[in-house]
Amino acid sequence: MAPIKEALPSSTHKVFLTEVSGEDLHRHKEQLLALLETICHSPIFQTSPRSCEFIRHVVVRSLSGDVDELKERLIGMLLLGRDASYDTSTDSGVRVRANDVRKRLAKFNESAEQEFSITLPPGSYVPRFFRTSSPEQAVAAPPGIVPQAYDPPASIVPTELNDLEQDAPPPPLLMAPSQLSLFQLAVPTLVAIFVCIICMRWQVSQEHVYTNFWQQILQGDQALLYLTPSHAAGKQGLVAIQELNEAAPLLDLAGQFHRQFTVMSAPTPVSATSTMILHVGLDATSDMHSRADTHEVTERFFLANSANDRVILDRKDPNHAVSRHAALLTIINGPQRSIYIDGTDDDAIRSVINRICDESSFPGSLADSFHPGTITQAIFPSEAYAKAILDRQPMTRGLAALEFMP
Image (tube, rainbow, N blue to C red):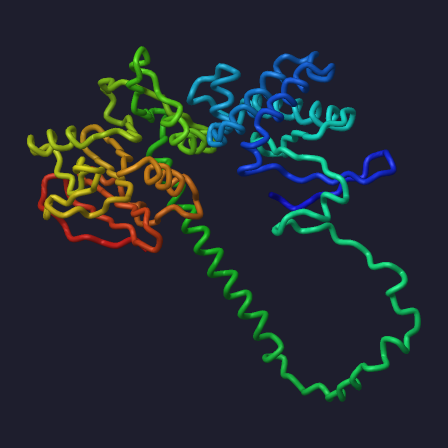
């Protein structure tokens, strides 16, 4: 539970709001769904069916535990019928709808006296749920609840200066300030300037590496994004929400560069050699084996299915797993340039996508990954403090020595 918040409405009594979360959220699910229906049937929301549709969507998803789906791109696709690769930076349909819902919720919460209330915080599409309580209930709140700060009663505040100074120790003797040279005075400033220069140079270098990497992929609006299709009955060829959720940072990043990925769910022959194909979550183990057998490529690392899970193997020693919890990034600079992002599990794939899409965490060792006729592979372990492994080699040569990325 979040800390108690105190609100002062127009009435004379105080209202205490306690956030409902965790197990309490599941316990009060039926009451919150009933409140949702009350909101949608209120005069404030009846005039806007679209706002009612929006609040119903985000509340039901949140109460079901699917908060990962409450992102701008996915909401735009599900509620507004947008394409998977639409530019969220120029299309503000979801943001406009959310702002309207926030205003209507604020009016409803002011006009209605309910045991529970729902809000939509600015900049987020995940609703928050609160429960009203009396001051007595707030005092009896369980451990972990931080009470509202209060002013002490006037009866315990000393009224005479002597009451404060009676047992106070004598003030320390004042020492004469020592004489400092101008250089000594300037040393802290010079150190601070030096540190700032180092940080600025690192930031500029990091930004250059990150920008250059993605410009190589997104140049000319010829980047294709292949997502694993769903294999559910009657849904062959459709991309699952889980894969779209994992790829959302890639689609958003393309918008930041004023480019876009063309999303595919089925392999398509590409004639233009300048086109980059990025495969996400594709089980490319058999595909890589077939290319290796024909000597087209020689990836050192590959994913394989063991008895209980998926593992990353090394062709130098295929009997021992390199990692059982990691993502594998492969960049092939052949006649058709391709990038494969796969892993032993969905969390590993999601983690490496977030890392390479974030300028502050982007691995600078990937800067030189697009030389023609080369293959770059990087293993990003999920274990804390484990270093990433980098392998870069010509496409038809022997296996090179490993490097460890910082």
